[in-house]
Image (tube, one colour):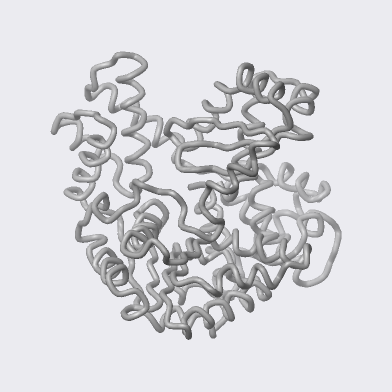
Amino acid sequence: MDSLHDIWQSVIAKLESDGMTPTAINTWFASDCEPVALEERRLVLQTSSDFKRNVILQRFGDTIKKALSDLFSCQFDLLILTSDEMEEYDQEKPLDDDLPEAAAYTFDRFIVGQSNKFAHAAAIAVADNPGKVYNPLFLYGNSGLGKTHLLLAIGQAIREKDPAVKIGYVKGDEFTNQMITSIREQTQEEFRKKYRNVDLFLVDDIQFIAGKLGVQEEFFHTFNDIYESGHQIVITSDRPPLDMVKLEDRLRTRFEGGLMADIQPPDLETRMAIIRNKSAGVGLVLSDETVEYIANNITANIRQIEGVVHRLTAYRDMLDDTITISSVKRAIKDVIRTGVFVPTPEAIIAETSRYYGIPEEDIRGQRRSKNTAMARQVAMYLIRSLTNLSLVDIGEQFENRNHSTVLSSIRKVEDLIHSDQETAAAIRDITSNLNARNQ
């Protein structure tokens, strides 16, 4: 999920799949019911009246919470506010540029092993002396290994020492969206002040700004203002700066000018420690045999381990089931099956559009400019590589191009991957971004 809007659209899709008619959706959700915030374990909605709130809670509340539970593998509450109650809520909630509420993401809850020992030590050092050592700190590694945990732990440790510290937290794609919104609404100065005046700047998934020239320009000046003020910058990414081919050199050198620390998949002992820690956090007691079985089968991603623990907790609570190897096998089977991510053609075209900065309708359509044609060919190649669609089905995604045109485009990209570094990087980056957005 990339934003509150995306999460809410997934919830609406769940309501539709449960049989809610378009008329009912328009009546209760389309006009004056909108998401306000996604807090740690609570979705906040705003609607116009007590009557509408009561109807939504009574008729659809359980379905909404179930959809959120399916998305995040944990239980969520639902808060619906009327327009009159929003002012009080706005006064109580944290500032937009403050650190997200994330009580679980602290240093004492981070399991340290050989795969993340260096990154953990660097994060502790930064939290103890912000702006004095390792600035910027650049944490990188595959999704689900703990980069965001360390990023937020740094913020919480610094805030605990100094509650008045001003923290800016943003994801790479959100920085892009906020910048575009500020241009459209002519609020660029407010947008710049929001991040350039912070004491601690935390940026998650920076890879999403690569290739976006205007965004990189804005981020470059934001970075410089914060750095030259002696304030701390911490950045995470799914790859090192050198592997971001579309990242501007001036940003790459600044990222590399601090300390870069990678996080690798955890070894067996660390995975077992993580399983015990996550289980203890939800009051789940697992035998050594079950812990070892999970650790031997879930090897690359801590989020998948968390998913297994949540499923086992559900088996225990809802089915009154004793946790055995059999129930563990069922939980792991679900994770492994859902863990094989197959993006939709629409998602591939959308990510290709973002990467090249070319509208989706141009990629699907008949425009023949060199850049548009290249983006279209890459999208065709990725759909063929990442899905089970036939050449005819792929052609239908691009205004019914015939299968020979699709095949020619795919073969051209296959040849370029071996001879052209920029094309190879585009394939790698778009694929990586698709996987990251699915986490």
